[in-house]
Image (tube, rainbow, N blue to C red):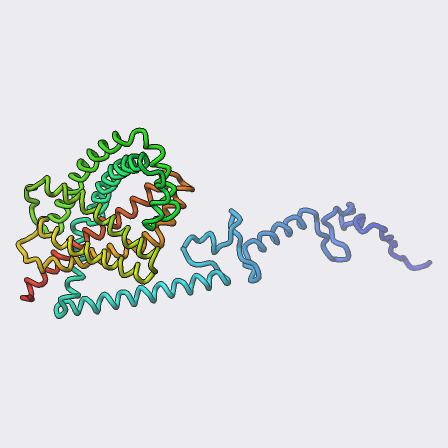
Length: 378
């Protein structure tokens, strides 16, 4: 009798149908040949873990991008310059600015150390402090405001005079060019003369009233500015008619002298015209020296008023050169581009600079006198 042989169990073609020890069919999580089979849930869990690991682990080749799409350097908001060439250029500008600031601080420190031994340095520091204390910029603006309205009255008076002149003489434009005025000024004068011919007498009367009235305002502004610069109580105005007459007459004389200098420059040459401009500045400086003796100040000799007169004279010469070579073209372009508003703005800037020079001159006289008195200088 043949020996007993164990029954042969045939393996299924499908590994998932292998019989377990309990005789049941294996599911999808069963093992094949001793190795476990991954389920769909395990693979999904691994993918989620991989994505989470990529999100949390830093990538050395990629900068993190914030939620709003900007780079981390831009979103930091620390004011640091951007990276790359633009950042290097900003660094260079910043270094130059810091170096310039350091040199400026060193210069100020050096001048501060020289104040006790140098009257000139002490005067400069006190000049700046005086201008800040009395708000010289505001005073200059108020003076420019008064001068602007006086200029408006003068323009009305000039319109009436041109209209009256055109009744007896038709060549207004050629006459203006003969005295050295530019083509734009000559054309404007001819146009004004033509338009104001019918009402020239009324314009003359109205202009005279306005010039006198606003001249009184300019006189009061000069009075108060000099009192503030010297730090004294403004006294009561005396000889008002003579003061108003001076305020009205002096600008006319100044304009006449400037016209002579313009004629010399246009008909003789540039160098004689420049010398004539300097002569006008010297004449006005002498007049301003005399006018300062009539304005409020401390009891000082007339020599104490020389620094302010010199400053105003040089400032006026610079403004005249500026107006001839720069402002005339700006006035022409401003009038053609922006109309009356541009012309008025340019004129206001010119008058503000004139007021600034007058305020600076008064302040310079006051502080220079104080320094001289404290140090016993003559």
